[in-house]
Length: 220
Image (cartoon, rainbow, N blue to C red; front, top):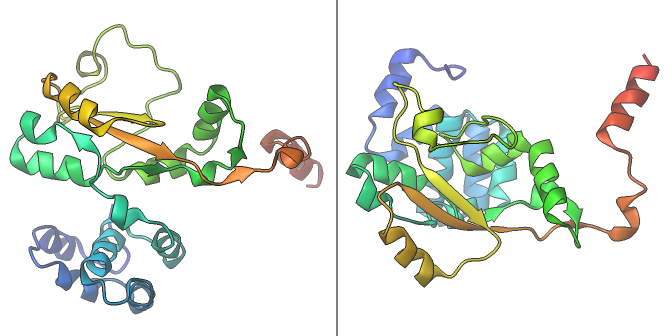
């Protein structure tokens, strides 16, 4: 996907860039100001968001949203066996797109949620969920049944190595590391965090998506 204001040649040149500071000159100045105001004297954090902005063509609104999260602190923190199961360049990239914990605050579910409600909320917010996961993830379908491994069912000839990522409510870091040592397939384990809940008294009073769409349709 071409980025606004950039030529294909420029994007190609920057893809091989070894100096992250160069990306500062290729994102809007308003974005740079926002990053500087949020990151202060933390140079590495600022350059992290500069690179993310360029790579993902973030608008200023999207950038501001991520600046208000702890994305930088969580990036690349999942426990994985990528270095043992992938070539060096691929393992570094795979590790970089992981986070621990994954923040699901955007789901806005009730505090006493059950598994079905969490699953439904993820499906309803799948675009934001994929943004939270990072580059390299795609939505295949809901509750896709696999009789054998993903590599045999879904992987195409042009696809790279399949990475497994388990996202659980809590984990024991030591046990997770030992468990991954026994696997020959690339797997990562992260926790998820939900700290924003919908008050119970509002649960039944809010309209559903279907009700909102129906009301908008009637007003046309």
